Every structure is written in C-alpha cells, then in structure tokens.
Image (cartoon, rainbow, N blue to C red; front, side, top):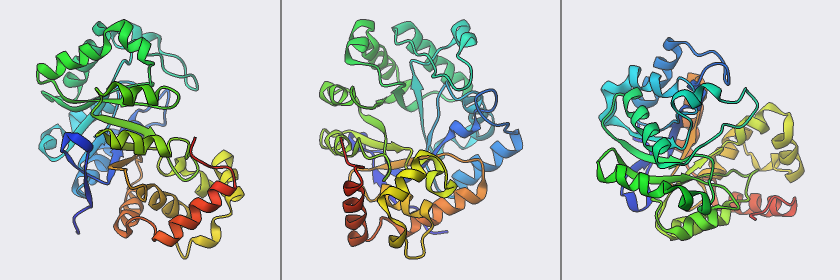
Length: 304
C-alpha cells in the first residue's frame, strides 16, 4: 500500500495525512444511526491500517470517544487524536437537546477542564494532541469565562498538546486575530466556499487547517437536497472526465493550497476505500480547478 500524502499542521509541526477520519459517524442513537461494536472496530482499524493518522471526535458525538478508547487505544502511537471542549458533561449532558436540535455548550473553566478529563478517561489516553472549542464561541464569551486560560492550564499540565477552534464566520476573524489557537477546523467544499479566504488568512497566521464537510456531506452523489441544487446551478458535470461527483468535490477540497487535512466520516469500508483512491489522485488539475472556481463564482458560490 502506498504511503498517504502528509502535510504539516501549521505551527504544531505535526505531519498529518491529508485525509483524516471524522468519528462523528460512530455516535450511535439517538442522534445517529445504530453502530455495532464490530462495525466500529472494523472501520477504526481500517482507517489506521490505511495509514490515516488524524482522528477527530467530540464529547458531543455520543459513544464515539468510548469506542475509540475501547477499540484502538492500544494503537495510540499510530495516530494524532483531536477532540472538542465546551461540550456538556456530567449531569448537564443528560439534558442534551433531542435529535435535530443543536448541542448546547458551556465555556466555563470548570466545564472545559471536566470535559477534557472525561475525554482522557473515555479514550484511555494520557493526552490529547488537539483540543478544539466546539461551536465557534465569540471572543467575548471566551474572555468572560476564562476559557482560553483553562486550555492553557491543561497544556501546561501536559494533558493537551495544542489548542484549536472549530470556527465559522462571523467569529472566525476574531479567533484568528486572538493569536492563541494552533489549529482551526473550518467547513469548506466547492459548494460551501464562504470560508475560502478565511482559511488562507488563518494559515498565514501560522495555524494548522483542518477542513470538515469537504465532500459536501454526500450532496452531489445523493442527487437531492441543497448541495445537489447548487451543483446543478454551477454546471460542473462536464468537468468530471470520468470522476464521480464525490471524487470531484473531494479533490476540489484537497486543491485549496492552505488545507492540511480534511476529515471525512464514514462507517462504510467501501466509502473509506473510495476516499483513499481519490486522495491518491491528488488535487484537481490546475486548469480544471480554475474553471470550476470560475463557474462557481458565476453561480454565486463565492467566498464571503
């Protein structure tokens, strides 16, 4: 099996595979589909066997952290582990909103520290490589709660290595300016380009860039929903040249010059193999990438 492409995750210096694994699909009911332990073990070990070395999860992702701890903690040296903070823990987590409603987050020092300690226990590890604030809290919220200080204290204790922010507009510009986040996780794809320029700005500031949503959540392949409508509006089918729509979307994401890794979640081994095959082909040819961006611009799918 050929080695996967790696890129340096900003100032962290970590060499991460350009394809990472997003473990949200392991969350299980009530907010996700049923996932057996056998399915989880199969996909997690297939991810590591393929050479993928960046796994992203969260307290909010149901059973995901516990499955990682139970099933691949023995392979901990083979991958970088990223989770989130600000998620509800303890008794508060029992009152989490029902499926379809957004998760609540609390950014007090106490909740952040309790969350990281819980993640360490669940995943049977002494440290997390990256801890990201979940939900893109405002600069004001972070300052009022001493949130960043809590993470810096955990760094001093060796419980986390690098701090991050799962960020979106409008708060992303403030987050970059704060200069305290080593990694940004940002949504981006050909059909969701509003953060395209902000990704470049965060990278120029020295941060590592983790892209989520890099395959547009399957929209073009499903031929239904908002992403499918946007795909049709842009008129990209004649650029495929034998690619599936999903491969095209994935390779467009890989073409962003400031991307370090893009996390894609699945419990389907064939989907994983399809993603690995697309990764092996690399970014889109320069002329195809430029023409795709021209058409997307003309269709109104531009950076903010």
